[in-house]
View 1 (tube, rainbow, N blue to C red):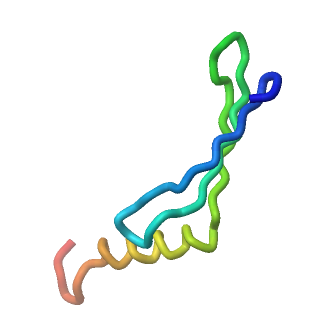
View 2 (cartoon, rainbow, N blue to C red; view 1 turned 90 degrees about the vertical axis):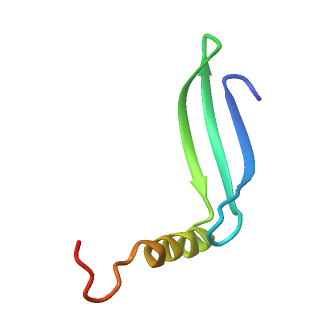
Length: 64
């Protein structure tokens, strides 16, 4: 943490397409987190979203 900002870098692990490199930029004020900016590797996130779409797709002819 430097001053009132901190950056956390981690692998967001899913059971879909593997880990997604993720970072959070936090702004702290009076000892409390006041804002968070989430950064993700969109190249990997697209794989996660495609797998989630595949898992939730209704089979042809299924009633919703």
